[in-house]
Image (cartoon, rainbow, N blue to C red):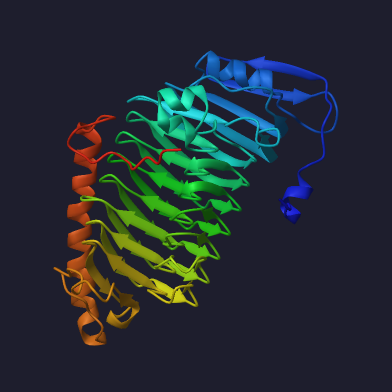
Length: 383
């Protein structure tokens, strides 16, 4: 796979003599030369000792898997900090359990990969094949600020996967050229997890089946605001920007831009967004430009199998929504507003609806555990 200019700019190896200063709260690493670097073993030690804070600089090349994070920790990059997973050899982070929270700041996560779906670990616990850079599960939390996730791979959620009522917050982050062999080239949400995505960009991410940038399943919740989805692909089934499915799954898109996302094969539908199997979509003020489904079905938004349009305001109109010709018009319980004079009233109503959905998501987070019988499990493929 070709790398970008940004990749090349950070690919120079660094050899350093390292000294370490450790306090009760922070691990700091500095070099004796003019550049800084944090080697793998020192960062490993900081995680293993459950320190709450680590600062990294330079290029850290992984030599193995880090310990599972079960505590609160901040890992912060200084300067041009990159965590290199050694050409898809390792997944950088796993965060597990209620009370566990990982915060990443000012870093590049480069070429991470989860274990293969056929691996022994993934056969015992299938979510281990997901989340090429970060896997969050069993009620854990992840926050990312100004993080660049580049060229990661996994079965689902090539950059991030969240299970079991986990919580993900990403602000000012970039997701580029990540590849999921199944769904969610950028982010995969399952089992009542919820995510807030603000002022981010998803570009050229791929879901081999569906959800080129983000896939929302199993009663999960996504709020995306002021985020750009550009040239992502959902190869076989579509939803090249976002795919939402299953009862209780909700996507709210506010002031986003969906630009030139594409369903690749003739079977793909929903060039920008695919809503199905009783998933629900709300849109306010988002723009849709030159998105395409190769089969010609739902270049912008495609709704099938009981999908629900909660409300569309200040952006897409009814002509942007398509559905199978052999199915009735999708359920639109909150209506669809296209007239300017009604926009203020509709936006206020939508804000109230979104507040209700967010409260439900928070309630789910406090009550749902991984494998809960109250939510449909994520769909697993065999073979």
